[in-house]
Structures are given as structure tokens and as C-alpha cells.
Image 1 (cartoon, rainbow, N blue to C red):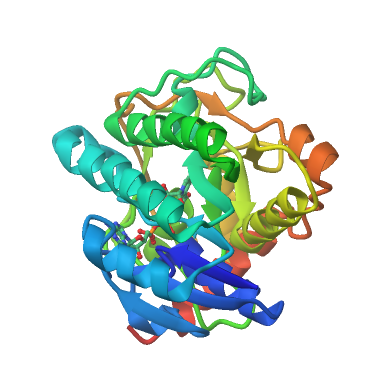
Image 2 (cartoon, protein in one colour):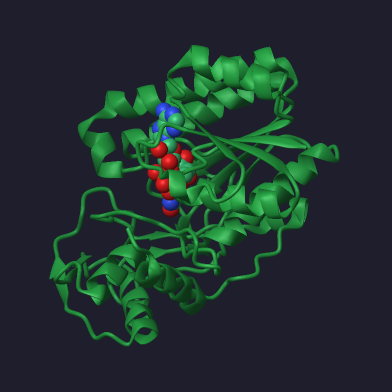
Length: 324
Ligand SMILES: NC(=O)c1ccc[n+]([C@@H]2O[C@H](COP(=O)([O-])OP(=O)(O)OC[C@H]3O[C@@H](n4cnc5c(N)ncnc54)[C@H](O)[C@@H]3O)[C@@H](O)[C@H]2O)c1
């Protein structure tokens, strides 16, 4: 079975490609390398191309004729999306529209889409269910919500089965240590804390200690990247065995505060690094945690790495070993 992975040279996409190839799928990655890396595609072929290049995308899909598409390619930095909203709408929404049009031409039957908890904005309650209101608070979240709607309408009109996966905070790395997350100036807490532990960044900022949470810092649901990738495979199998198109939250349903994460990073790395308190950042919800019961019940997803220390350890092993 052939699967096209857009964004296959990126952090999550490269883990997905590795898992798919290990499971025996034929995989082709499509990535413009704007934030991806050729070395990250450890298995299968890579076409370097942009979703906004309709002609190339069409050529690739008509030639490869995938049975399914897993669509990870996107711009993903929230503050950048606030500064450059049109860039995000063009890349993420327009890019998705191009992909859908070409999927129709190539008669692709299944689509798995990387959405985000950012579509919920500031949730009215936690844990968040898929049926809760969506109200993004930044252009990144809107670009994903618009894409979700286009996929729903497209799926209905063209008979294409889709799974929309709303990820929470993805972290960790494959345990073989060949691939992992890379960023010079990361905004994700775990990666940033590891860079501070490594001495690449002088100290770690905690943005706000006066939130209405037990220790005053924000609470998030951290999921290991390989559990997330397994969820994609499970949803694809569910769709292929006759399951209905659905939206699924993918998280563990347990939140950790910023201070709890920092404590765990210090324990795992053995480094007592400097932490400073900073002002709240605009638009950070106090708490966002998934209710993953739908994907567990409907699809049978069984996470294997629900352990914050393990998530941090795999990210730390990668961070220390990578020669980039
Ligand atoms: N990392 C997280 O915590 C998280 C959380 C929620 C959702 N997501 C979603 O997961 C997906 C993957 O995120 P990631 O963290 O791996 O980011 P990433 O930046 O590492 O991967 C995205 C990849 O897409 C490629 N890309 C971007 N625009 C493209 C275009 N127009 N044409 C072709 N390739 C393009 C980039 O080069 C990159 O390799 C994204 O859709 C993101 O919105 C990530």
C-alpha cells in the first residue's frame, strides 16, 4: 500500500515515515524543506517540492498514485502566524486546498490530517472533547480550522474518507536516536528546557506564575511522538475497514504544569539549570488537556509511552547525540 506523506522531512512527519516503512508500507515524502531536513527522511523517497506548486504536486500524485495521504506539511510557529497571517493562510490553507484538488485528480481514497488543539482556543472546560466549541485565538489555529472544514466538505462531496487528528503537545523522539526535533531557538517547552540544560541557552523563562492552576503555571498534555504516529496508523486502518470519517483528539488526557515539566527535565538530565519568571504571554490558555476517550473507544488506540520522564529522556538522548 502506497502512502504520500506531506511534511515527511519535518519533526513529526519523519517519525511517521519511519514507522510506516517499518510496518511495510511504500512511502513517498513531499516536503519543501522550509523547516524539514533531507537527513530526517531515513526511509523511502523524498520529493523536494512545495504544496503551493500545483503543477508539481499534480505530477507527483498522478505518477505515484497513493492510496492514502498523510498531510503534515504546514507552518507551525504561533507568534509568526500573528505577525504574518497571510503567509499562514496561504501556506496552510491554500496548500491544503491544492492537495485536495490533486487528490481528487489522482483518486486518492483516504486522508489523515494534522490538526491541533489550537482550534479550541481558550477551552471552556478541560479535558476538551471533540464536540466542544472551536474558537482559535491566532491565525495558525484558524488556518487549521479552515482546512478542517474544507476537508469535511471535500470528503462528503467526493467520497474521500478522512481522519482529522487534533494533536496536543508533541514531544520526545524515536528511541533509535536517528531522528528528532530540531530548532535553533525553540518555543516548545521541553526542547527549550533541554537546550538550557545543555548550555545552549542561558536560562529558561516561565511565562506567568499567577494562573488559576495549583502551582500558578500553565498546564499542558504532552504526548510522545511515536504514540501520535501510531494513532495515525490506527485511524487509517479504522477508515480502511469501513469506519466513518471523524475528528479525534490525540493526547493522554493528563496535564503537567510548566514547573512539573521543568522539575522532570532537571531530574532526567541531572542539570540544575537557571529558571526565571517572566510575564504571561498573550493568548496562553491556563490549562489545555485532551479527552482522548473517542480515539481509544472508536479506533482502539493504545498509547505505549505515557510517561513524562520517558518522553523527556528520548528527547534528551536525541538532543545530546545529534551532530547538526
Ligand atoms: N509539534 C507539535 O506539537 C504539533 C502540535 C499540533 C499540531 N502539529 C501539526 O503537526 C504537523 C507537523 O508539525 P511538526 O512539529 O512536525 O513541524 P515541522 O515544521 O517540523 O514539519 C512541517 C514540515 O512541513 C514542511 N512544509 C511546510 N510548508 C510546506 C509546503 N508549503 N510545502 C511542502 N512542505 C512544507 C516543512 O519543511 C516541514 O518539514 C503540522 O501540520 C503541525 O501543525 C504539531
